[in-house]
Length: 174
Image 1 (cartoon, helix red, strand yellow):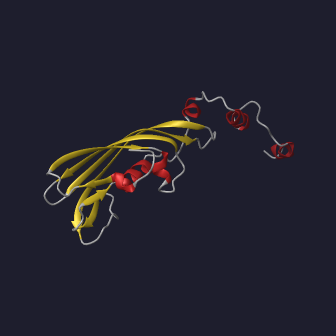
Image 2 (cartoon, rainbow, N blue to C red):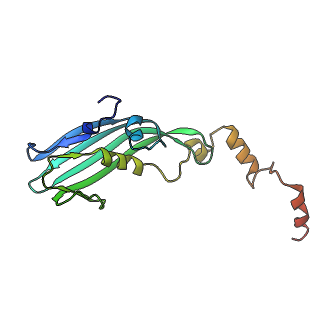
Image 3 (spheres, rainbow, N blue to C red):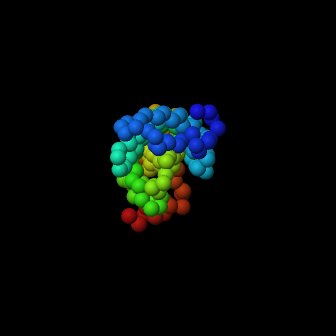
């Protein structure tokens, strides 16, 4: 697959496929997410192994993403590489209209002959982003940046806590 985004590159044409497992590999880069107007991640390099299982009356989709992307730390505002190892599973059923409201199955129209996995891959990647984005150096105390030095000086337990002298009068009331 090229760096250019083609939605059809993510089609799995199941019409004519034999019953059983079929494997597909998708290499995801920044371009993929930008097409969903999602710009929070940089240097995206994720390999998605997809197992599409066709059965008589339904299909299953298993996506496993492994790789990395860059995040910005919530505390230090420093970029860091985040390792991704995520998985998403769907059951694909046939029905009247397309419906992906349920997080365990997708309904596609009965006359469908293909299933596009782009949105599923996008959801898997977005769900892999941690709620709290912490640089590993912030966690283990090894990050040596200007921001961290200022935060350490301002922390209540530091020796060089900067205080406003106007607050000193309040100490007399304790």
